[in-house]
Amino acid sequence: MSDGKAVRQQSAAIAELSNDWPLLSALCGGTRAMRAGGTQFLPKFPAEEQDGYDAKLKTAVLTNFFGRTVSVMASKPFSQEINVADMSADLQAICDDVDGQGTELQSFGERLLRGCLSHGLAGVAVDYPAGEPARTRAEEKANHLRPYWSLYPAPTILGVKAERIGGEWVTKQVRLLETVTELDGRFGEKQIEQVRVMEPGLWEVWRKAADRDEWLVHAQGITSINYVPFQMFYGVQTGFGCGISPLLDLAYLNAEHWQSSADQQNILHIARVPILFGKGITGAIKIGGQNAVLTDDTAADLKFVEHTGAAIEAGRTSLLDLEDRMRQSGAELLVKRRANVTATQVVSEGDANKCILQSIIETFEDGLNTCLGYTARWLGDTAVGEVELFKDFGVDTLSDASAALLLDAAIAGKISDQTFFEEMRRRTVIDYDREWETEQTQLKAQPPLVAPPAPALPVHPGKPD
Image 1 (spheres, rainbow, N blue to C red):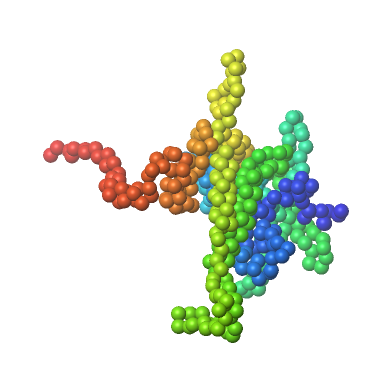
Image 2: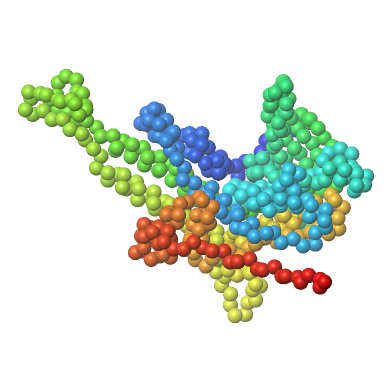
């Protein structure tokens, strides 16, 4: 295959990983994205009529356990301020606006981690504006020339090439899919797809030719560095440049819930509309309080046939069981893994009893520090800086983990207070005899919380006359 066609193709490893990405992206997109997926996520059965299927699809609503769990988990390491050390004033200024668009490192990191947990893969390019380099630091500041970070979600990473040098994997090439917006006439805009290629010492931007199925170099240039300033971030790393979501099983359970919930909603609609059954009735029938049906046939019968509800209850029970499995699947990231340590073994503090999310954050932290190192080199700083994220969120049991997950979801407004109360009661954290209505009454009766008074300011005596 020529370079003009291969540049846009996914590598074999990325193509294999991408099989899961349509579902993961749709779940992150919510109900609208799942509906847009149609039969890809909500199969149409052989005997199902198209009109009935379309109605079922339009009324289906996603209960987004996957998206909610990704959001809650990604926020945990950033629930406290990032600790920074050995950072120059110039590098600190970059951290206050890492992408050149006003995004602080705290917010950028959380968005980056969300992509790692949802798709298992993301990348950050630490680049410098193209053009003539500034000759002095004053000229650089005057022209607003500074390194900036660009986040590349998993679906935009087409391929990564690396080789092992001195026992470490070193990136030799990365291909990234981008979409840029350009003016189209006086008022219009158009979206243009392009591929950015980064190699040590050079970069290229490829765009598709207008007259044929071929990609051509649209822009190119050289850099003053002999490495690729691109860092991979992972959910669960399966190889260099390859990773899977630690919540992949939850995603498939959520897809099953989407399908089962749509069927449940559909059968509820059918059950709520009883069927009129008539025997021995001739002529047109009018239904209503002002109408009567008359017949001379003594064996005639006219009645509504209603659903017994057995299938509805079975479907409801199945959905509740599925929701329990989803909560447990998401909460497993927070449960500490017990380490079997003998009396003669020496285990460093923190190595034992570490949850999956803590292990992910440690690697994620290293990636951020690598990006800071790239940034410092662009700035010419010797102090590359170092960040440390909050990691003290592991719990001992699955029950504790699911309770913590529910609390975070309630605080974030993702579930109602009543749902939180009922789930905590079901876990016996709250006495099972407690009732929501009683709790509401007592909450209204208790005095409002009063914030502690602010400390009094010291009084400085004035000068004596």
